[in-house]
Image 1 (cartoon, helix red, strand yellow):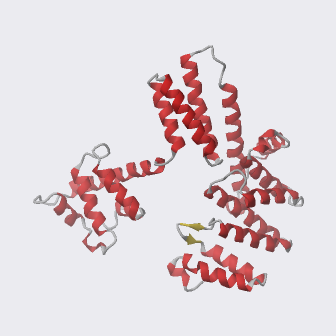
Image 2 (cartoon, helix red, strand yellow):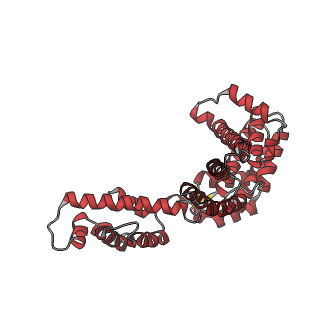
Image 3 (cartoon, one colour):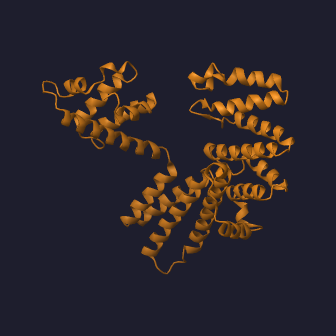
Length: 343
């Protein structure tokens, strides 16, 4: 059992998540097998200890007391628990996601032809969606909500004004964000992947967006200006607009989105510095400082050793000795333990 994928699943959960998993398995709605619940309790009690006692035979003896060990039956039980863990992870992902939950409720009311309840749920969904982070999911859910409203309206009263113009505008915004973000990430990684974007389509999109109202959407604007500054590196005005977007946090972007944008800016700055633009070393330093202040360089409390080395190295080169000493002191604990002493 010690090499099973089930244990790797469970070890990836935080203690509070494992507690909720226990409640999930205790609910007959989610799990009707008592042996699955007992197996989880057996494993959970020993997960943080020496795994020597986590054998299939010892687990079988506890769950199926008095029965002779049956390897096939035990493997089935492990599989059942693993599937239940997957169901729990799905629930965790949507837990607290008010917009997605309201969208699902909209669909349920529409399918059951409950117009009064649908309208109330639609208002809540739109309210939640307007207050959500303006990331890609924001626009995806906006489209899904309006699509449900279109299907509901078309099914209830065919003579009402069409919802299609709103749907088209939302879909166009979503397409531009998706396409520009994908192109930006590809541009940043071309030196690794050696893959090229479709230059004809991207040129067409960039030309259409120039001066258009779509640039009022912060996420479209920020990726548009990133691509412009990469395509025309001599015109640093594009970089300044991009920089202003990410430093000011325009658009209420979530942490993951801002982290990706900061890394794009940092990589761009390093490339410009390596090409002889000395001033970009200070730019990269400022970007790293801002990212540290916002907690964007930590994932689950850990910092990449490469980021740690880059920050310390740039700080020393700029003779920011006091700041760099404080940085090393404050963030050394975020390095992976086996790398910490060396770094």
